[in-house]
Length: 563
Image 1 (cartoon, rainbow, N blue to C red):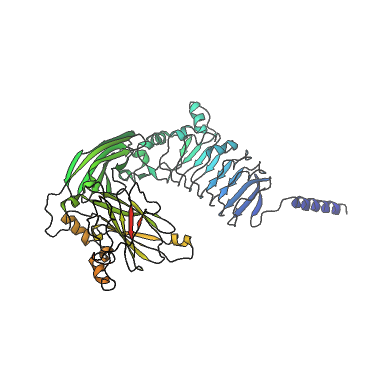
Image 2 (image 1 turned 180 degrees about the vertical axis):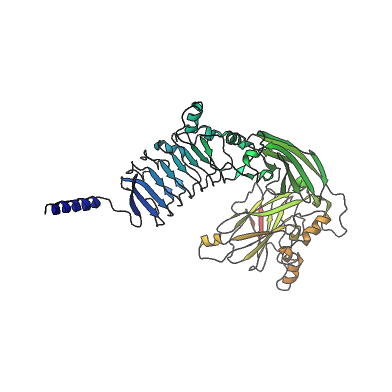
């Protein structure tokens, strides 16, 4: 009978010991392993790592969960944690103090997350860390002192990331490697140093020369998991093995051009070329006076391993294109430039017998664009180059809803105009011409407003603009103008057909192209037909006024003729 109380005592001790064990997190599993208590949470909806986890856990595994960050202070109660596995989550950020209080941590595994960078100085708090697994992330750079605080690290996996260029100094500063080197290779090797760098998009140029030398020199106890690192670029080295490729020394670009002075006639196509020899391959950019308004195609090709050819293609050169064109090549070592002077000569061909252009107009260039969208409308800006220093412009504004076009006469010195009070769900067309020239000879923009959502924000959001080319030049050589006229053009609604269509509906009435001013050189100009009305019986309807908000007056005037 004495054995019965003894048996009951054993049962009570057993139950008491289990009651003392902390409860597990819902959806997770807890177990006792040889090294201590383990928490395992797999495929559960954890938005973040639970706060205040019990201290007795030696291993925490949270995998296949939507954990997106490691914030500071989350492991404050887990000073004895030795193994932290956070594989296949959505971790994108590790805060600088995230590893504080983990002085006993030996393994950190972050495979299959979305890390672009790692706060390497955070490893000050983990002096005992031996294993760091970062494979299958998005890390694209390693600082030279990345490993300096990982004094006991013997396993580093950086495979399947986005590394393109890495300095050999990253690994020369690896404390474990330094210890081995300083011992003169005579000290007893207690453990191997394992390094994984494969399946990265290596860019095999001069910047990887040091890494290649390091890889070729690796021997025990350093083990490269996969020594066959593959070059992803540049194109002429893609597919080559990193340790088999020959890489040149890095050098500043040396740039040249086959011709520093180029001369063409108006309307001719011209291609400017520059050749840059450099390692690594340089970035080439062109600068020229009218780059904001005149955008040309740039073709880039590799003529040799370290030689890059850049070609700037100028179709139908105009007089405004003449000037200096600078080709600039730059890489991580330095910058070099070369200047090409382009001369454009006026065309010698005679104008057609029935041409609307005078000889002086053949050198005129006008470009119109929408530069800003506001709640109430749009801001137009134009650039013009002409022989005459004082240039008057005429804007023709029409819409599907308005019965008449709005004509705006803009004085010299103004190159912007604001079109306000736009109607919702309406197509607008704006054309610009020099002086009293018909609008079909200028450049037009067409834009469509969205439906009115009942608020100003809705109107701004639904305003869409599309630039439609009518004629690039107000007056160009006959061949070039024929090409422009054959291009798709919605501006055909402008011109005499409006007059013929509307003449039957209203009495003719037309504004002057400019107001009557004393000593005004434009007072003898013929009137421009507004809304299809002929000059006879012209009546002035617009008062003298300043340009809208955003206009650059500089002493100029704007006159508006409205219905």
